[in-house]
Image (cartoon, rainbow, N blue to C red; front, side, top):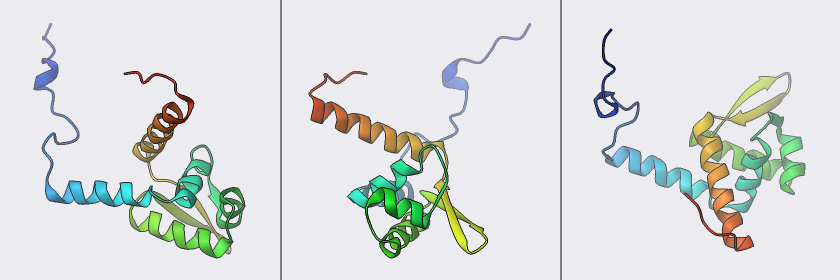
Length: 119
């Protein structure tokens, strides 16, 4: 029976060292999350795909505004869209985006509700 390698011997799928490209990408993601409409759009996509008209209604903006925000989110790799006839259906691009959004909003909930912070 072969011993399993210690957890420190198992390579991480993500590097521990920060390089400029990763810092820049993270800053771009955080900057895009600094807009209430974009947060609402992403939150609407957390459990289901949706088209621009549906997302605009949920976010409380016009479809043209939603489309512009979604374009920026797509450029930054936070969402992806696919054609479905004449409309584009959007979805979050991966579990990392969902986790980032969820954790940010859970953190905000603690700030607003006064609930103690936990690890």
